[in-house]
Structure formats: structure tokens, C-alpha cells
Image 1 (tube, rainbow, N blue to C red):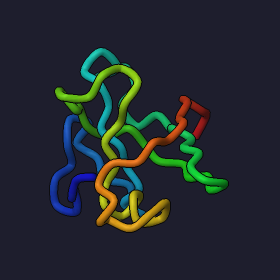
Image 2: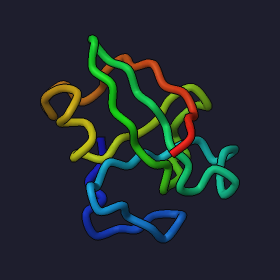
Image 3: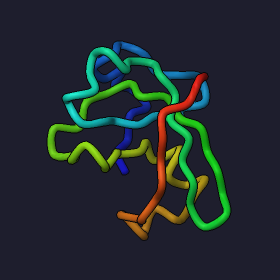
Image 4: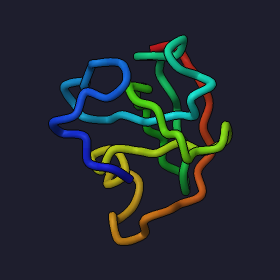
Length: 88
């Protein structure tokens, strides 16, 4: 997870709820502000892609700390999620 409270990222946008994701550069800028549905241990969370994650493979995303905490504790650091692009 990453803290983005004051950094609008590659898309220049932070949604009011702070639930955002950074994605592989191949998706940007075409997927700026597009939504991602995350599934994790019976929980689902919708976030917006607002930044680029150069170290993320095309199958990985980096979540804001706000979004991550809705899925698990920050102490976990990295969790195995399922995700897909969905309409906002």
C-alpha cells in the first residue's frame, strides 16, 4: 500500500473517499480514473486507478492505505487479491 492523501498521482486526481490504486504503466493514461473491483476474502471494494506503479506487473496493483485498510490491516503489507476493470 502507499499513502496518497496529498499526491494526486499520474491522473492529477484524488477521489474524495481516497480509495485509489496505482497500476502498471501500460494502462496509463488510458485507464485514468477508471474503476477496479477488488475481491479479497469475501470482501469487495471498488477503487479508481489514479496513478502509475512502475514496479507493478500488469497483474498487480498498489492500493492507497485508505483502500487497503478496508480489506486488511496495514501490517500485512502485501495481500493476494483478485481484481478487474469495471464501470464506475
